[in-house]
Image 1 (cartoon, rainbow, N blue to C red):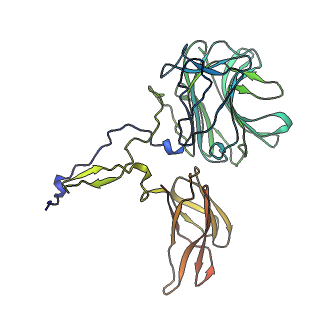
Image 2: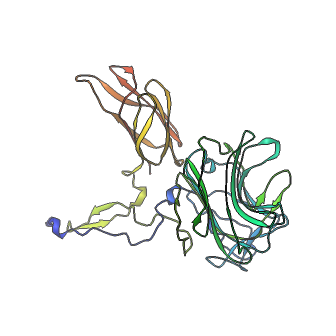
Image 3: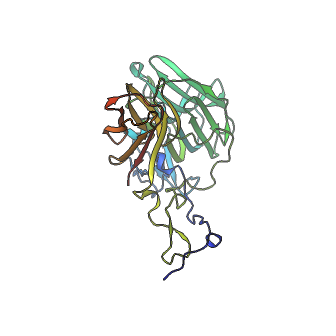
Length: 369
């Protein structure tokens, strides 16, 4: 029979496979890998989103930051488009949009070249745009969020040395503050509050879609959108390798090995059904406030004791939910019930002695393979 180890004999395992801890929140991941001239655009996020190449936008071996290929856009009419999908509905949650860009020429005065854009100007529609533009000979990396005929934020940074050089660019929204970053150096932050990102957006890469359309002239590599996470809130060193396609084994199950002599990293990884994929602890009395959470973007107060728990990213299938609340009165029957749940949220209601009531401490845990 195997002998159980003493605590002094137990080694803490370290993951051997490098990964991105935020890969589960990555909504879109474009390496732009493939054969020269290919118009097949592969999304390497878990969502496997369909990305459509238009007017000759194609993979090219002429330039790349990583992997030997990148997306070539000729500045004439090439672009990529993505139909509305839940994972790219950014809303008011934090997000990070980033890429490597290489310009073959510079936009003329008053012209903006879009790295990423959602929706359109036409008809006063809401839009989110991340662009390089020329303002009387000064070049800016800029992001704008426009809703209901008002610019909710405009954040920019003066940039130089744009031609024939790879640069890392990023738009970061923390939920309260927007930044742009050029080669890891952040702009000043611009603050606003609200839920104003386009609600059902069509997304474009390389197309500035307005009353006049403009087209990016150059190469784009390693475009990544992370929903629910502001990856950079201070100056940083951009990645020196291609973005990673998994979490590695950093979040894998830790299990007692078969001989009970120590621990090993299990094969279940982050997909183990016994692992929580989201959780939240919040105060449901008065103005709802979240004490702490993981993969939960917000709580919506629907009335006495009833709340929507909104996930930061959508699950592939409806999850399993466990909810509880504290009891402040002795010999009182109380509980939390799941009213309904979808892949994007769960609705719960709290009761005490059979009556729906607000509760001061509510906890929800979400499980999903």
